[in-house]
Length: 113
Image (tube, rainbow, N blue to C red; front, side):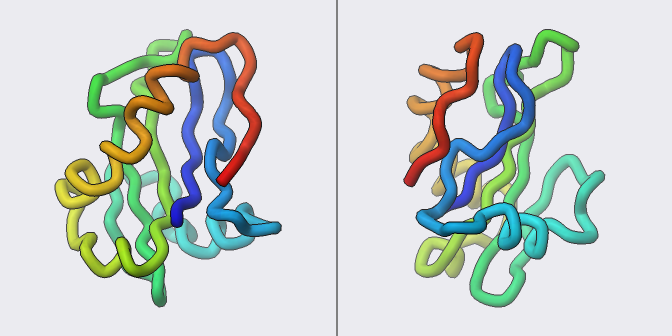
């Protein structure tokens, strides 16, 4: 289960996956507090992991910024994450194709899962 927040080429930062939670923003804010400005993050918070890394393909938004990907990763997968490299190996393959389909869309997709 994942919460995934990112942005596309033309649309701003938003959740693409909400982890099936009613208030994913609350959980996201709690897990990512104190690391707002860090470019890469892999930090355990209770039973979750805050994971952030720049787009592995170096895709950029229309302002020329490399697109970041923020994840709140829940157990059991969270137990296997100890570094950003682990996240790239274990989490990115789960969402890479999905992001490739939506990042250039003019409008952001609806949040789900």
